[in-house]
Amino acid sequence: MKPKVAFFDFASCEGCQLQVLNLEESIIELIEIVDVVSFREAMKEHSDDYDIAFVEGSIARPMDEERLKKIRSKAKILVALGACACTGGINALRNQYSIEMVKKGVYGDADIENNPYFDVFHTKAVDEVVEVDYYVYGCPVDKDELTKVITSLALGKRPEIPNYPVCVECKKEGNVCVFEEGKFCLGPVTRAGCGARCPSNNNACEGCRGLVDNPNINSELEVLQKYGLTLEDALERFKMFCYREMSK
Image: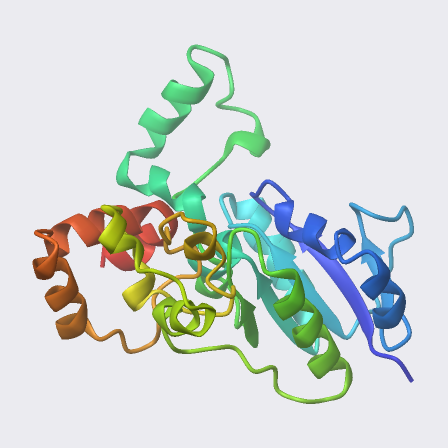
C-alpha cells in the first residue's frame, strides 16, 4: 500500500510547496509511489489520515503550536520542509525585537489586541515545538533533493541529506571561488545539497541551508583572514536564515 502524504503550511511564503508543483513531469512518477491526501496549495480535498507530513513554515502563535502538535500526533513521519521550518528562516529575524515592537511596526495603531490571529510570540522552528524526523533544507528547497527524499521515504529508506559544505559541490562544478571575485560567501560552513546553485550562477552563498553539523571554524577563519574579513562579518550574514543559531 502506498504511504499517504500530506503537506501543511505555517508562517512562510509557501515557496517550498510550490517547488513540489514545479516538479512537473516528475510528479507523475511520485504519485505512483505515494498517495497525496492533503495539499492546500494544489488540491481541495483534505484528509486527516496520513503517514508522512511535510511541514513548511515557522511557528509564530499559540494556535500554530496546537495545530502542529495535532499534525505530529497523526503522522508516523514528520519532515521539516525549507528554511523557515528547519531553522526559523527569515521569519526569525524579528526575534531580535520585542513582540510589542514588531506588532507596532507592522500594524501601527490598528486594534489587534483581542484578535487571536495576532496573538504571536517569537518565531520558532518546527523542532522547537515537536519532534522532527527529517529535514529538507533550503530557501526554497531543491527540487531534485525533495524528489529523492520523498522516494526514499516511500520505499522505507532513510533519506540521504548532505552534511558537508557547499564548497565541496562548488569544486565538483569547477566553479571559481566567489571570494576571488570580491564577494562574501557562506559556502565554507553551509550545508550542501543544492548543487552550489548560487555560486554556480556567479552569486555568493547566503547560507539558506544552515550550518553543517560540525562546521570547520578554523578553516573558515583562514578563508576570511585571507580576504581581509572577520568571523563577526560571517556571523552577521548568517543571521538572515539562521538567526536562531547565531543568537545562541
